Length: 314
Image (cartoon, rainbow, N blue to C red):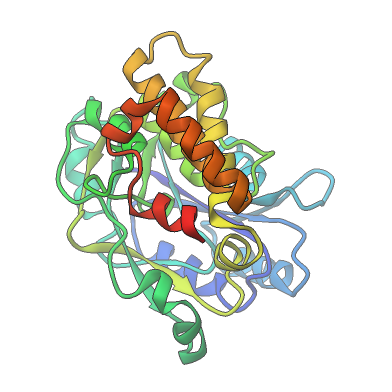
């Protein structure tokens, strides 16, 4: 295996060295590609030092030296990658020693186009744990049981709690089928849930197999300045950000003639459910009443799960 590990770097001077070193421990890692995204701290200098120290570390910036977000940075990393396989890592996260154990076996099968695993949690400080433990606790982010690749897309879009989740940090892909089958990689206009949206589409186009799903292969680094926790949890209503995600999935699904109508209908219902959840309280209940009369099947299908109910009464 020749793996290119892609690491977008923004405001991560304290963590990126650990991330890079965690990737370099593997002989399978052919190169570590750092995409420095106009960080306000000293991350660029740290990245330059890492590239000078390690022959396998390559540093890039966007042509305009500007800030393009995680999506644009990952896309640039994919374009610069020369390995046969791609893996991703956030600059404040890190790999564990078993990161590619399952992949080395599974990719012997040419039908395997991608492998996903479990993600653990590491709190960098007691203050971070105090702030974010209620969100992440100590649980694994993982898919709860092994699924056939043709079931992964449907498991994700139903989001009823029985399938689980996998993270971009635990994903390894064959580069060639990714470039052949996906015209659009990470969507650069998305600043929230861009990885989730990518994983939804990816699981439709590529054959993804479970690797280590009951033991972490990477760790999410939680600290006081995590982008996703601050933005998604405290600035924007989670129902609002989820509505944006499902609207994006809906727009994509409508352009794909091969997606079964049953799946498209479920995506439409999920989009509508979060549109209701983000509405002001009085309007929200009016929409619910209308929904009960116009689309009762959605109620029967289990659409109003616990998360939706919480958003509804918040």
